[in-house]
Length: 415
Ligand SMILES: C[S@@+](CC[C@H](N)C(=O)[O-])C[C@H]1O[C@@H](n2cnc3c(N)ncnc32)[C@H](O)[C@@H]1O
Image (cartoon, rainbow, N blue to C red; front, top):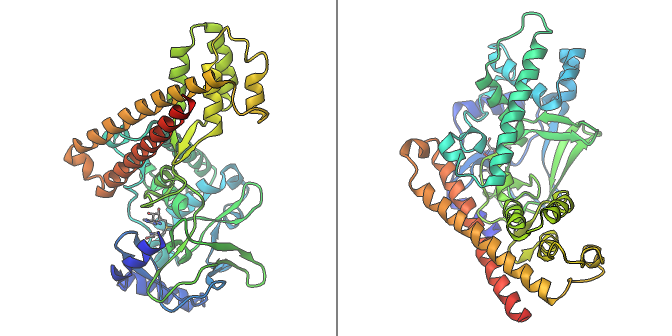
């Protein structure tokens, strides 16, 4: 992956428009610590930061002084006690909306460089695109939509408690909420956390290869990011937003990585359907579901079938009247005291896994085909939205195909 990003060094251009120049003058005037970074647009990752000089491993790449941090702690002080009714993210989002409405704000040079839209984020998708999301991702995006709505209601309630409240539209609030969600940093590890917007630092893009340390340095009274890997002049400098799979990155940040070792496919939905189909005894379905429901998270990755999934299938493969569960064999497997219940159970497990993966694969292929027939208007929501969605389904198909090969190998050894 590193090589892929290096290659693109020949595919960037520097951002040096009036807004960026104004922003840099604003930083310099207030003595923002100098960096070896400049804003550039890269072919594969869009706008990000490029090294203007070689950067050594262990160097601080950016240092944002407290005076430049828009932090939730600070906002609680600004807005008074009533602001305690809002959690950190809605408070930051509201503040951002109010700053955008203020023609006199000193933050204008920063605000001018914030994204104008979030059309690659699934939360903004029109129904035709939303309907093509994998089911677990669709549920999470739905929850995110509800969270934004609930936060917006809380903000409207809060505004009623202050004098001359501003009018805040849902559209402007959602934009600000997404700005905070895609760009904020966590300044401390206090419970509830102190979140902050941090100019310049928030131009750094993500790669899972980036090794960094970050945190508030009381000596310099700044939030600092140190890189543990060196960069050459002209290379894009990255940070690491965390060990996220592509569906999580897509949901939270609106892009996907070309390769991602954290990708997985969830088979929860298919496992429940299989349990209903295979178990004749209603009582056994109820008992097994009770046992399994708390587990969930039945996933496969490339060359890795989760232990939880195998355990769940071992239990489902036991017939309702089978005494093996009560005899403790399934329990022994869960506790790591035995590898499997017996050969026959294990064979059934892999046959079931073949069924699950085949079903999930067929569905994924159907979704891929459906994406090809989407109306132009949907595609124009943002061309990358469709491009990323295609990649999500392609990765899903690849993981399922790989697992099916592993399942066949396992079945041939089980005889
Ligand atoms: C903290 S901001 C980084 C700066 C941002 N690119 C900008 O122009 O303001 C996070 C956003 O950057 C974009 N981004 C970050 N890493 C990326 C990557 N590796 N590839 C593509 N887009 C990326 C996504 O849109 C994400 O929501």
